[in-house]
Length: 454
Image (cartoon, rainbow, N blue to C red):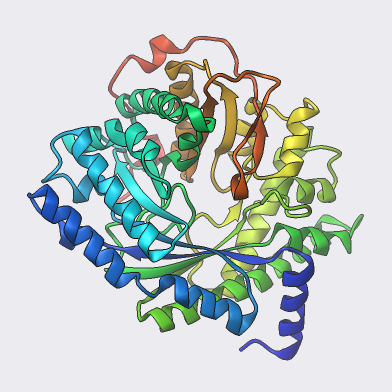
C-alpha cells in the first residue's frame, strides 16, 4: 500500500521534478497471425492489433486523470516481424507492406510508436531476416510510428559479423532515404546485443517469443527526481549518496508499479515488468548528465565520469528491485546525447567524445544512443562502431546498443534538430581510421569462454 506521505512526495516529484511514466507499452504476440498469403497476413495483423490494443490509449488517459501521473507515451511492441512474415514475405518489398500495416494500426489506435519491425540474428541470418533488414530503409521512410531493431549478438552465441556489416550499410541507406528529414529514420533504428524480450523503450522494443499473448510493460523515468534528492546531500559521503539514490529509485519504481498494475487490470492482460530507467528529456532539469555533475563532476566526459555512472546505475537497480519483484527491461541510466542537455553541453565544450561515451556504455543501461555523426561516415566505420558495442555487451553479459545517425549533408560543427523527446544534437567527429578489412572478414566472432554454461 502507498501511504499519505508517499502520495504527497509523489505529487511533488510530478509537479516540480519532471517525474513521469515514460511509457505504457502493450506487448502483443503476432505468431498466431502467420500466413503464407501476404494479404491475409496483413489483414490478421491489423485486426489483432486494433482488437487487443483498442483500449490502450483511453486506459492510459484514464490513469493519468485518476492518479494525476503523466503518462507520456502509449506504445505497442510486437513479435519480431522477421519471424511473423517469414512464410509470406519473399522480398524486402513484401516486408514493407507489413511496416505500412503496423503504421496504419498505430495511427488508428493513436499510439506514439510501434516497435518490433525487427530481426534477431545473434548467430546467423535466415532469408527472412535478410529481407527484413534490407527493407528497413524504405520501411522507416514511408512510416511515421514504426521503430526497428536488429539484435546482432549475445553472450551465449557471439556476434554475427555478417549481420554487423550489413547493418552498417542499412544505417547509411536509412540516413540517405530520410535525408529530407535530417536522416530521422536512423532515430527509429537501433542495433543491439543481448536484447531483452521485455523492453518497453523504443526503438529497441519487441515482444519476445518467451512472452505470452499480450502483456503490459511500463517504463518510468525520473532524472529530475534523483538530481533534486542529491542536491540535499551535497558533499556527503558515498554511503549517504548511494542510500539517497537507492531510496529515490525505490519511490519512483513504486509509481511505475502502481501504474503498471492498474493498466494491466483495466486492459485485462497480465502485468509484465516495470523498467526503471533514468531516461532524460530535453526539459530543463531532466538530465542524467546533471546527476553526474551533482555527484561531483565539473563536466561529463572528464575523469571520474565512468565511476560516477557505474555508481548511479547500480544504485538505481538496487532501489528498483526492492520496490518491485518484476523489474526488467533495461533498468538503469540511459546516456543519449540528443535527449540530454547536459550531454549536449559537454560535447559542445569538447569534454565528451564518442570514445568516452563508449567507455561509459560499459556501465550504463544501453549504449551509444542518439549520436549524430557526419553524413559521409562510411558504412564500414558504422559497422565497426556497432561491433565495438556488441563486443562490450557480449563479454560483459549486458545489453548494449547503437543508435547512430549519420546526418546526410551535415558535418562536424553543425547541429541537427529532431524535435520532441528526441531533442537536438551536435554532429560529433568520428575517427578517420578505416576498419574495412576487419568488418569484411565475414563469419562470426565466437562467444566468450564464460558463455559455456548450461
